[in-house]
Each structure stands twice: as structure tokens, then as C-alpha cells.
Length: 336
Ligand code: SF4
Ligand code: SF4
Ligand code: SF4
Image (tube, rainbow, N blue to C red; front, side, top):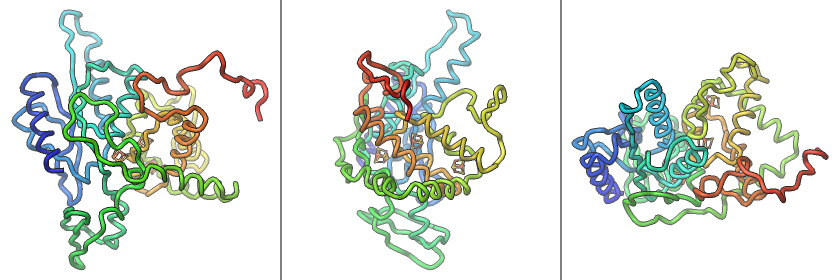
């Protein structure tokens, strides 16, 4: 990872110095132990802040979209001759690159608005898992040493096997290397267990309907409608989200049980053919709601019904954004 970080800093410095990009969106060391955080670097002297480690959790495609969208808005009333172009450099692992592909397929910006600095990925450490293994105690210091995470809490120093705390989505990720990139910082990394991708969904699907519904309602009863899951998701970028729309009002804004369920179900359906399983929404949830259990089912359906893997091929439109004249249409006339 150190050599990737070194190359990343060099490439970022070069891109900024040569004015190929206006800003680099990457990660820097966070203020808490075992935490890296998104950063925005526009000066080539500052690129040594960039890090690449097991604590880079967020999907940075979100910020690419936000920056380009804000720039587009700021250009609305500018005279044609004074319009400017903004190019974003972004540090992208597999899932980030897939989210960028979704944005490009959905025509949110152009391919030349973004320079993709690819990083091969070996997963990130899930905050909840590491907190569990630290016994819920405050982690005062922490670092990765080979295949273990060394954490220091009030009770002492503890070694935790790295694999035990890698996020579930990373353990079964098949696109851990960028699908598209302009620059690569290293050769491809091996995926872990992609053949296990749908095991959890399959097991869950075999449970009786009542049990599955009870699981869903139980999870949703913990949701406090903070919208962090929506706000962090690169595929959630509507200017006005349906939950905040007042004309018409689709759903109440409180934490009434049914409103919360409708919010989550609607958001999940918006993710059909668009969720890259980056886990950002799961990581950010303050209540530990198990969103992935349901999102992964959509991913599986997309693959089984349409042979489509989200964000895997730039020129292949998502299933819900295309049609064939040979498509069956019985479901329209003969709903089950
Ligand atoms: S989902 Fe894949 S690409 Fe994304 S962080 Fe995990 S291993 Fe890396
Ligand atoms: S729904 Fe969650 S896992 Fe899927 S793309 Fe959005 S943030 Fe990532
Ligand atoms: S982040 Fe968690 S608590 Fe907040 S709205 Fe999403 S599911 Fe609910």
C-alpha cells in the first residue's frame, strides 16, 4: 500500500502542476485512530496529504458528482465567453469507478470532466466490526501490521486478524480493481471470495415470508431517518429527494413506522440496477441498520434477470434505462 500511496501522490502532484485537473478528490488521514477521510486538494504542494489505506471507506464518486453539479449550477448565468470547465481528479477503486460509470451512463457529466486515478483495492475495515472486536471500548490508537490490526484501548493492546474486520461487501467483491481509469497506481489486486457473493442473500431468501418481513420491520424500526445513507450514496443525487417533496408529498417526514418503511423501500427501488455494493451507506448508518441485506437482493436480481452487473461496462446501459423490441411484455398485461 505504501508504494500505491507514493505513486498516488506523484500522479496527483503532476496532474495539478500541469493543470490537467482543478482538484483532486482523495483520502487523507482522519483525526480519529483507524480513520481516513475524504479530502479535496487543489494545490500541488499539498498532495503529500493523500493516503491510501484500509480505512478509506467512503465512495468518492459522490463528491465528483457534487462538485461538477455545483460547477454546472454556478455557470448557469455566466456569459458564454466566460464559461469555464472544471475537471476533477479522483482516487478510484473498483466500486468508485463503477459509480462513476453510472454517472456517465446517466449523463450527469462527460468523461473528460473527470480524470480517474485507479487504485487496486483489497477492501476496507468496517467500523462496526472493529468496534465489536475492541469490545466497544474507545480505540485510542490503531494501525495495520501485516495481516492484523493492532488496537490500543483502555484495557490494553489487542491484535485482531485483518480479515475478521474487513467489510462484508469487500470480502465478496468481484470488482475490486477499477473498471475504468486514466492512470493506474499499481497492478491489479486479487479479489477475495466473489463466488460467495450471494450466499447471504440466498440463505435469507429461503426463510419464510413472515420471518423476512419481521427482519425488515425490525431493522427499519431502528432507523431514525437521519438520511445519512442517502446523502453518502453516489447513486442518490436527485436535486429534490422524493422524501422532501411537498407537492405531491409522497411520504411523511417523521419517524412514523410506515413512513420509514416507505422511505427505505422507495430508496432501495431507486437502487435497482444502480447499487455498486460499496457499503458506504452501511458504514455511515449511526443505528447499524442492515441495509445491505436488501440491496444485495436487487443486485442479484439484476444479474439473474438481465445478466447485468452494475457499472461494469461503460457502453452497456443499465437494465431499467433500456429496452429491446424482443422484450416480453406479459407482466404488463398479466400481473401476478
Ligand atoms: S467493495 Fe470492492 S472496490 Fe469497493 S472498497 Fe470493497 S473491495 Fe474495494
Ligand atoms: S446504496 Fe449503499 S452500497 Fe449501494 S451504491 Fe449507494 S452507498 Fe453504495
Ligand atoms: S443512515 Fe441509518 S438511521 Fe439514517 S436514514 Fe439511513 S438507515 Fe436510517
